Amino acid sequence: MSAPRIVRTRAALARYLRDRAPDGTIPDSRDHGLALAVPRAYLDLIDWADPNDPLWRQVMPDHREGTILPEELVDPIGDGTHSPVRGIVHRYRDRALMLPTATCAVHCRFCFRREFVGRPEGNLRPDDLDAAFAYLAAHPEIWEVILSGGDVLVLGAARLGEILTRLRAISSVRVIRVHSRVPAVDPCLVTEAIAARLRAAAPLVVVVHVNHPREVSAEFTGAVSRLIDRGIPVLSQTVLLRGVNDDVTVLDALCRRLVETRVIPYQLHHPDLARGTSHFRLSIARGRRIVRELRRGLSGIANPTYVVDLPGGSGKVPADGSHVLPTGSGYAVVREYTRGRSARSRASEGGGRRSGAHRTDIKLSGEPASPTLT
Ligand code: SF4
Image 1 (tube, rainbow, N blue to C red):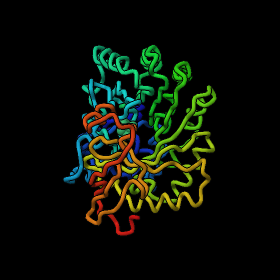
Image 2 (spheres, rainbow, N blue to C red):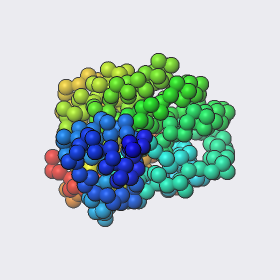
Image 3 (tube, rainbow, N blue to C red):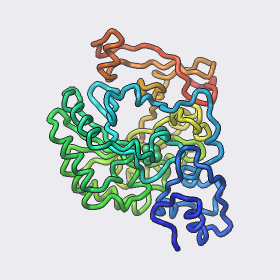
Image 4 (tube, rainbow, N blue to C red):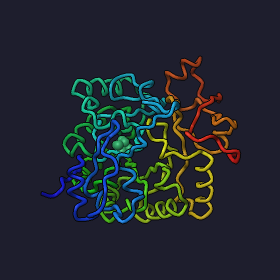
């Protein structure tokens, strides 16, 4: 019996490994709250001769996930704080996140929503969906809706098409954005039918999540080409991960390969304070050094913006020296701009201001801030 299309058990993984890595051991069978789930297409990209393979590291449960640091959070970017109804996160005034499903094609071990993904109770029921669409319709300030999850590209063309049609029926929603890791981990799910549904909902932008140059496979190129050839803009998002891509050479290769496949590198994310993920994190200081070096050698069109999503739900800020500063105590002082935050947050601050700044002490890494953080 061969391994299933999505490998979800230790036994299925052992079956897959039998031919590829006969002496390969499966290091840890505990899932630490996030079940194993890896498409065979992604397993095929792994170098089984390398025990520290960066792709393997992203998907295989690790005993270090059992170590929970005091600063780590169940909801690291504060989705719950900004969720007025199930499945909607309204953090910024003119943008809302819609999470129709908790299902993903893959379970990434560093996931910032690891306490949410893969749990059936996270999927929106029909009445939840009705309430989510009603919220969007009742808030004409929402110009852009970002479909995330979970991963809506696993829903199939018919269900995704239904969601897109309902979004398009809300005249104040002008732009739709879809975030997905599917093109990198299970590219065959980006079917012609899905691409056609996405095109029909234009203006719509797809942001693909890609963390390593080896994920930019021939199949990935085929999947994004099905979108780009239809006129759908495709950008990329990458999480900066220790032991995966915290290396200028790796990031340089990734960004170049993305541009060569007509994908524009958009954001490089500092890893979030998700529970049990400290082995993936690096300091902001180190991240900045890597990004400075990357900028030196890479064309401007290939350079992503390095950002950090503030713990607690205040939103994303550039992880550069004008926003994130050292304090010498393992904490960074963040200059956080009220512009773009949700109407609710601004109102609670005495509101209505469209700009202005305040400072917040937030610990951004499991590592102490480095004295070279300037
Ligand atoms: S695809 Fe995204 S949401 Fe799903 S497990 Fe990976 S990082 Fe988390």
